[in-house]
Image (cartoon, rainbow, N blue to C red; front, top):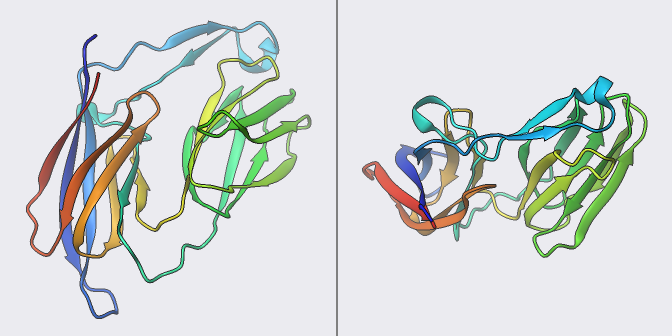
Amino acid sequence: MKSKRCLLVIGMCLSFPTGLFAQTSVSGRVVFEGAAPPAEQVDVKSDIATCGTTQEVHHLILGQDGGVKNAVITILGAKGEAALAPQEGRLDQVKCEFQPHVQVLPVGSTLKITSSDPVLHNSHGFNEDGSTAFNIAVPIAGMELPTKIKQPGVIKLRCDAGHTWMSAYVVGVDHLYYAITDENGNFTIQNVPPGDYEIEVWQEWLGISRQPITVKEGSEPTTITLKKS
């Protein structure tokens, strides 16, 4: 089997928050070497007026120069003084696709599930061990049904209402140092204390990769090669 390769280019810029020690802004870019796997073509069997006759499933979306969209970046082991505040996320269902496809929320945050489609949708979220995180049907367009993000980890979503191609991911985090890449693979994580850590990249098709990273004043940009067999 050919290996899947991903490059993580890291740069660190010194910033000066109101505190005793300087902290850094860790910026970088996730790049995939090679072509993305072809989109999966799915024939639609129900709710064609809303969903169309076919749907495309993309497991890896590349932007400019192979930049990887929707990769979640975390710095493991960093300790901060600020509390991790809950946030409010939103998951919509538009033309039989979940939007957004990937989002990151601190543990304790509220995820408001809604639908813009005039058909029955179901948001069934699974924890990494296969257990159900939540299972919420939205029978009427415009309804908003809240649920809590209860633990860290990746929640994978599917629709059980006959729309087998629908998928999305909600990543719960219990620390301050995370980001999600933009359409060209770029990211920034603010206010990281100096130290030796691991930087983790998660992407739905590439999986998880980790590499050591040293955050300090005057660090040179670093290139980390991530591989998956």
